[in-house]
Image (cartoon, rainbow, N blue to C red):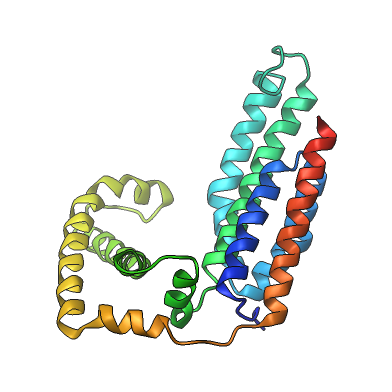
Length: 244
């Protein structure tokens, strides 16, 4: 079961409001509660919870541990306070920053990764992206999966030639500089070929024509997204006002 597609305008407004609310909230407990009780279920039903889990483990968790060590143990205070004056507030600041990062990442993943491929052009048009900018953004979305495929091919080739002894996370990280040159050359070549192909087949004009077609979106899903975005934004504004 997946979330029904909301209207592009509702999706965009809800995303902006949710981001604003996340940046305003100052409470660690309520931020964690919204992340676990509201955002995670939405990510699950949206079919993107695996991507969010990888983001949390690979990005948020290391940053969280570093922040807790710096502001809670070394500095012993949040920014602006005297060093060692309040380790508890230092831990609070570190946890809040990490949770905000997790929530913001989840919001953007829920907003962008749940867009079906056939609705991508229509959604971007609803957000005001048109003309050449629309073609560029769609081309960027198509390029990312291809870059991952090419990177895996280059790594496999280096494994086969014996340049990498063991397939460990550290060894894979060390191969990053060796991936830049072939990936850059391939991306440039692919962009030129894609532009020529789109021009020959008139795909740009057809794309703009498809964006003009009306599609059905879920009214209930649009209302749900807007309600969550408005509610979270209002709560964040009230929360930051109370802290002052």
